[in-house]
Length: 457
Image 1: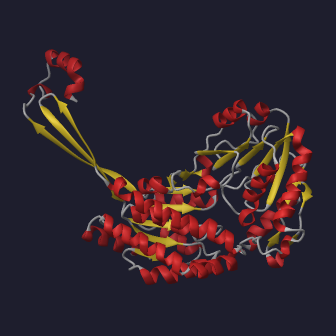
Image 2 (image 1 turned 30 degrees about the vertical axis):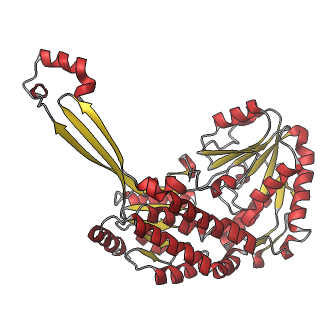
Image 3 (image 1 turned 120 degrees about the vertical axis):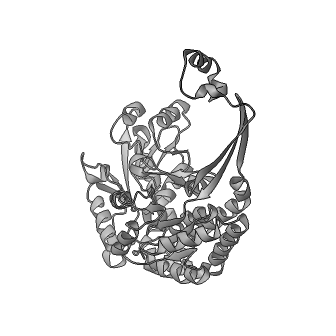
């Protein structure tokens, strides 16, 4: 495995940066794989996470197909060199800027969206002209092995190869000489990846998570708003990095919000979500135990049931958490929604309960002053007003974090730029040679420099 990046890098150097035709051909090949094996991927996602077919297609396959289509249509313009000419004192400078691939890129996917989070970065990397080594999560084994089977059959290893394995395999890869590493996962593992990559001076893109706040004020309450919040929270059984982590509700609508939350959950999943084929499961035993512990840190307003044998946790709403409880400061990443009343928005926003650098922030409101306060406070790269989740499905919006939620971005043009670097061809065409720039310097030349600096430099 340590030889993979060198092998891919040598292939890229020998053949040169791939043409737009080659890049588009690879993108279409990836698209055809998704279409031809759609049923198999849906079955694998059902096996790994209990995902219903609708969620598997909409949140994993469809979003990848849309990304490929968007990049395919815009790639020629992004690849076009940026040229400019400038008249200087005694010469004309010509500047040509063009994006070039890094080389061999390592992509480490996550288990919660094991198909999307393995291939979405690869789409941007291919568009930028790179070679890819993809390491899917071992916790979603069915999807990982299917990816390995179909991609390794379709692409030569010098271009794209899928490598499966656990933490030892990931550690071996991250300590290898890749030209760029793209990691999606927890903050704890992200720190380890960054530390190992630092030993090779390898640049790293980290897509992590956080406690995404969701604020519902008295002007934003509606049954439709509650349905959106419930859908965003319990999609994929809550295992979504941009899910609303905690719901902050104005005290004047607190009780009716709890009522509507229960009504929406029941409307979506019925009285017995355990028997509902539209509701997923927790991916691993370790994560199941972590999420179950959160339930006991508050009063259950709805749900609360779980079945360890089936890795099932009911859609759960909790209130009245004790100050200092882990559920108030740790990312939940599961189907447990804490609901916290507040009386004054300014006081709430200035408190430590709001993670300013979460991956995203949500607010349901019609109050423009309140919305402006929220947007000013949040440091997240993306803020969503009166909607959840949808922004992450758009290839026109860069997706990424800041601070504790990671760094770097991808999707659409942002992905093309992330997986490439700008290379500049600079040329000077002299018509007069200016001797005054060379030693020995003089006061006269200094005065000329200050007066004509914009034309000289």
